[in-house]
Length: 98
Image (cartoon, rainbow, N blue to C red; front, top):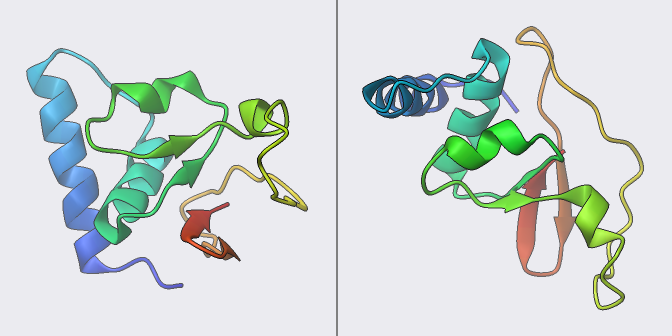
């Protein structure tokens, strides 16, 4: 998946929203949040910093494995750098950025 203008604009909106509340997240995290929110896709992470972002659906992979009703196999969790591509992992009803 390419990092698009729509992703960048959503990341900029997130930065503005957080700065209005005197909050910040790291730039790569802002980019990830922008991609996830622009696609209306849950972000799979255990990083609590993402909880500051409004309207971002977060799936904590550590909590997912504690729920016996969750039928998800995650092969690897990776913190992306801005130069890397984003991959998707799908399950029947969701798209996840992993």
